[in-house]
Image (cartoon, chains in turn cyan, purple):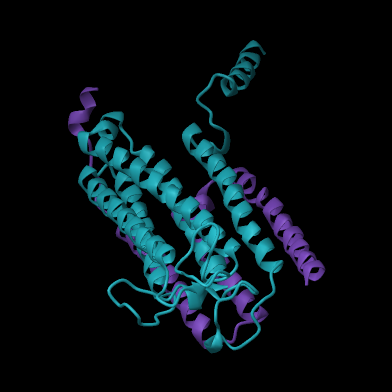
Length: 249
Length: 106
């Protein structure tokens, strides 16, 4: 009798002794998931605001080929985002954002490969794949910088203001592409995403440094790669939604 | 601390790596389909529904495989997925609101 009681006591006590993780995942990973959930709500807020404002503006009803930007209706994105670096004046709708999407997806893939290498304790492979991931993020940021500067400096045609002067590009007050709110949302949504990519690259560089100096090898596991990997995939995930709702629809 | 000297590096798990690239190719193909449809189909509700559907396909692969959520315990999966219902409600509410604003202003 006495023996069985003591065993029962032991198993009950063990649960409260520590070492048991809720969700069978480490503290850091669970917290990363909940942070990403809250961040997902922030991005939902921005994208839904885009939907709200778009629905409260008249849609353009004419044919796509005859589209001319106007304050009267919401623009068709493929007619606005049609430029590619070094191919000036050629109408290549959405090609550049398409390339950016592929770059970000590929850098997500190299991040998964880094996680896989980390689980095998393969320091060389982790180093290699982290470097590719950082490179992908940097290329994406460069593309976005070009995209912004093109959007801000505008087209040669520009737009006639009320006082007769020609205004090129967009800022928070005027916008040759359509209603001024369209430009504000462009800056806010792609800017907020770009900030996430930037912080992701910074975090990746720090983790890369730790890999190279052997911090995780000494620790005995590469779980940190999985945690920053979650963040990096989330950035990719958000871009998938931005691509659809801002550029395609 | 002394065990750092004899770390065992396991060989590459070929099937795992092959699966990662398979998903990468799926994501690439879905994006290409979206891109193609944007220029071949007339703009309209049907096209937008297809776009949203394909986006959710991509989101599923990224979250379940790349972020590994599919392989976590059920309670974690639902703790992450269920709250997003709130966002779906916000979409419905604000799109209806936007439509109402349009009808009042124009």
